[in-house]
Length: 229
Image (cartoon, rainbow, N blue to C red; front, side, top):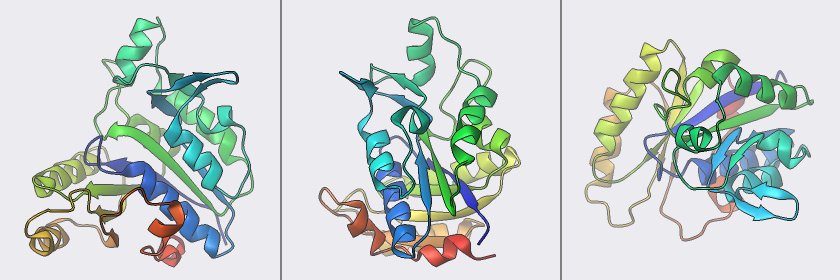
């Protein structure tokens, strides 16, 4: 089976990109696929004896079936939990979408059936005053999977993000409904509205789960759909 690669973005910072990305990896692992998970830019890292480490990047590294070094999974790490471009400016560093994509390509040279590249925050999170996270999938020429945090306001966030992705000329492969608010009113109606207004298929629905493992998330994902077409 040919390698499939996707960029994972979310409607906002708390949409649940990482747990869903890890669930996608775990679901593909169950099919016997070779999987890679990348978090090329991460802010909010802890200092360890091995260097800066980000919990989201570690989860992807541990869940993927192809072993990569931490630096391959997360080549750009910042300690403060702030916007990456601000963290970079504080360290007199310049973030480049093309350079970040080059880091990803290096890891993507490993034999794998599925590669997932998770962004930071939402679609328009800046890398600099000139570029946003959108430059990474644009440079990699990979389609996008949108994680929609299902809560009040999700319809607007989902539609606006999808419009931005389309404006950037990048295919939207589909979206995943992740119920981040356990008490969300009219969940079915909100989901159905997005289904009918978003020009991309609903790939999976993830219910609200307390501290889920990637394997628990995988129970709600049909990984075969990632390899269809």
